[in-house]
Every structure is written in structure tokens, then in C-alpha cells.
Image (cartoon, rainbow, N blue to C red; front, top):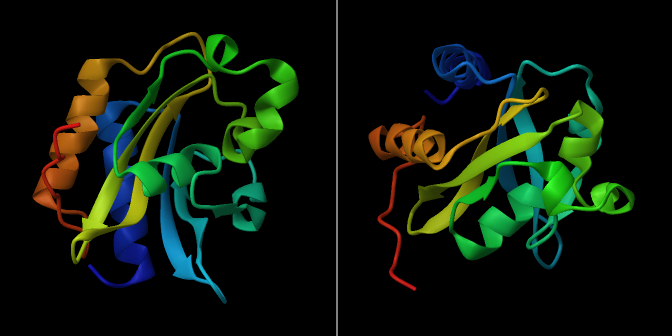
Length: 152
């Protein structure tokens, strides 16, 4: 599953099966002295602003998952972040997301990507849904293979 259309088809299938409003796959790219994270494939998007989002490790939802290697569950963005701080979460702001779950995608013993599912309405991503995303990554998505999380 190395070509763009295969990743896109897989993402569309996952979004449909899990009934998310939005799904995104962010991938790490090598920058001059570090890595940057960009949203490469999305499904259910309202616009193309995701193409201009560039995150550093630890910044934004994808950046936090990339840095820690651990999933993130945000049942309610309204309770998680003040409205004047949403600029720190550009994908949330540009896609009007209200509830988010994101898991790391591993390749060669390091996080290379982030898979995120989200809702725009009153529905909330639950722990059970986040676990389902993790189970999907255990089977592998393209070249990405699940790595068991280390105990804290």
C-alpha cells in the first residue's frame, strides 16, 4: 500500500466503518535540523487548509502523539482548550472539530505518523473508539506497523 490512492482508500474505509466525521493521517518529514509533521491524507475534510499545516514535534495534536508515542483522547475540545488557544490546534480549528482521538503509527521502531479520528458535532470520541483505532493500527496501515506501548 505504498501509493497515494491506496492510503486514501484505506482512510476513507476506516472513516466510514467507524462513522467519524473526519479522519486524518499525518506523516513526519525530514526538515533541515529536525522533523516536521504534515497532514498528508484526510477523509471527510471541509476544505484544503490541512495542506498548509506544518507542525513541530510536541505541537498540535499530531505533534504531541508524534513526540510521546502515546495516543491522545480529547472527548471535548471545549473543555480541553480555551477558545482563544485553539490556534495551537490548527487541524481542530480549520476543520471545526469538537472531539478527537489520535494514535501513533510506527515504522522501524519510531513514530512516523499519526492516525486521527474526530467529530464535528455533539458526539464524543470514547476510550473504546480510541482502542478500536489502536487495534486497526495493530493490523498495519500501509507500511506502518503497531508497536506495543511501553509502560509509563
